[in-house]
Length: 123
Length: 123
DNA sequence: GAACTGTATGAAGTGTCTTAGTACACCGAG
DNA sequence: CTCGGTGTACTAAGACACTTCATACAGTTC
Figure (cartoon, protein in one colour):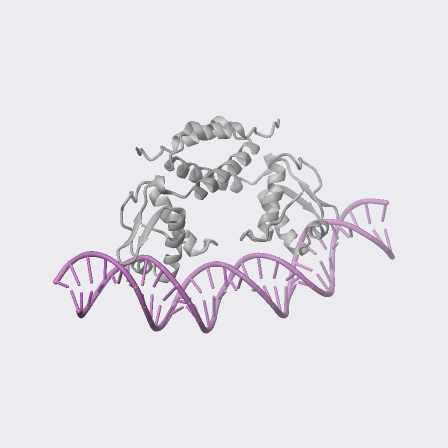
């Protein structure tokens, strides 16, 4: 379900956080679905539960999941994602696209890449 | 020319590196132009020269500038940018766009943002 | 030679990441 | 109610990255 790369300079909790977010974005984990518990995921990945909790904590702040004491953590609907996350993504999108244009790619090429992503056949 | 934000969790050398890269991408610094020396920029920003050197070192690996002992550092043409950097950017572009689509934006909206960036009126 | 340039090295302080261990409160099933 | 699983909180410790300070060397320009 998730892969850790110890050669990756990014902290483990970021790899877990980004990996889980990606699973939700790509539809592997769907709205309302129960995520692995802090302790079980820590066991699976052979890391400390505190590290998992930190990843969950941040995903909850972003609005990607909701944690309920005693019950577990559940994926939230995409509409519930925090607006700050949206703003950050848009800013990152503009920065990346601007540099790619500087490097010689055309707006049409970038638009083509977006269409090729297939928006997750949602709605 | 460059702003440092000490509330930003990113390391200073990354802020300098990304800031300089942005100045080149936006055309403020043009191909062949001489960049501030390691020591002078360190003095301007009131930080250690080693930190500037680290930023320059990485930009040179990316192909954005070329440093010559005794002479200085000079902005390279966009065609000289490393291919690894291109690949990283494309991967980041796809990830960001995929998440934005998941959050409800349409391919047309994203394409519109790209056109609004105005590719630096180069060539 | 003097003054600039990039480059290299080592030591010290600070902060983050991660682990380990413990503890508390909540929920659901038996 | 009891028990096991859940999220959450806290402290301590070690490992590592970031940054600074200081020094040094080599190349260029005048």
